[in-house]
Image (cartoon, rainbow, N blue to C red; front, side, top):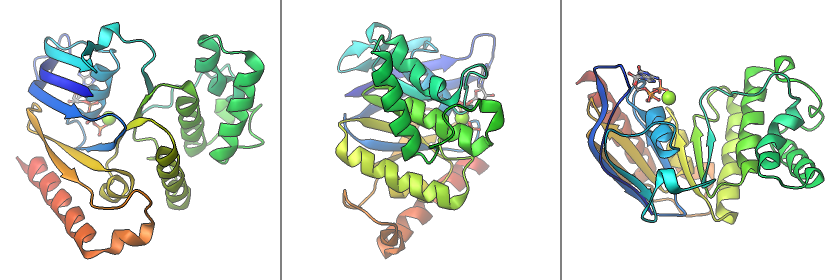
Length: 250
Ligand SMILES: Nc1ncnc2c1ncn2[C@@H]1O[C@H](COP(=O)(O)OP(=O)(O)OP(=O)(O)O)[C@@H](O)[C@H]1O
Ligand SMILES: [Mg+2]
């Protein structure tokens, strides 16, 4: 169980609060998307959750343990890919595993398998500067999945991809989640992507954020893109768009 209780947060040196008296509860094992307009605080939510920022008030806990006391529980894929330019693709993906002192050959094997899954077989020895934006994003995604946390924090992982690559990685990620005991929190701007991927969608509301609106996605665990055409799903998408629009004009 992931729990924010009465969290208030302002970036040091800034006047404007990003979160005020914000609470959130999420069950383990879910696939939860977070949407909200640009600048609303989605990335900040992840930074708080990963312990990169500390709230001035309130508490953030996982299974009752405060975040600062938890170790290696989350793998974070930031919005900027943050690949190390002096490391090859393969070395970048291996890094979090080698930091945890896993045997090098095992790390390499896992890295190569994951790179293959994201469509980058043959690129292992190249360097980030030789890759396109979408390829770098996939390397970063592979690194996050290899890192091994039970909570995956994915901040717009597919935003730089063309629509076909994006759709196939969405299908693949959904399939992975079906088989893995992981909790995924997924930030996206794309309403359809949120609906296809998640069990639950959270829309951050207010400036500063004081709450959220939750939507359950009524799709089965095994799902296909055709299901997005169902009338109840079309209705859900419209509701989300209407809410985002009203938040943007407030
Ligand atoms: N390091 C920082 N110092 C001060 N203010 C910051 C910092 N990082 C972000 N902010 C501010 O916090 C607010 C929320 O930013 P955040 O990055 O969480 O938004 P977001 O919802 O992820 O937006 P986007 O969809 O564009 O990625 C913005 O107004 C931003 O200017
Ligand atoms: Mg962001």
